[in-house]
Amino acid sequence: MTEPRRPDYLPEAIREKLIHDPRVAEQDLRVEVREHRVMVGGNVSSPQLKQRITEVAKELLPDYEVINETTVVPAAEPDGEEPVS
Image (cartoon, rainbow, N blue to C red):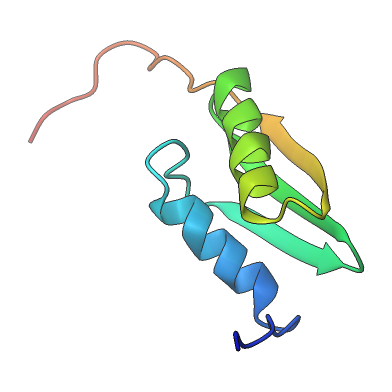
């Protein structure tokens, strides 16, 4: 008999799996689980990463609706040279 998932541990468990999945490997994510919905938020560097987060979350919880509220924030190019000490 398998132990049922404890709902209070589920958001952190999903977040940890997203962090350690090589397709995502993003640490700055927020995860909330309510009823049968998983909401993921935070900033990501590309639309492709945002899509991979949705795909991985759906794999982890196939019976849940995944709502990806991450924001794509491209990495800014540095303004000129940075001094090296």
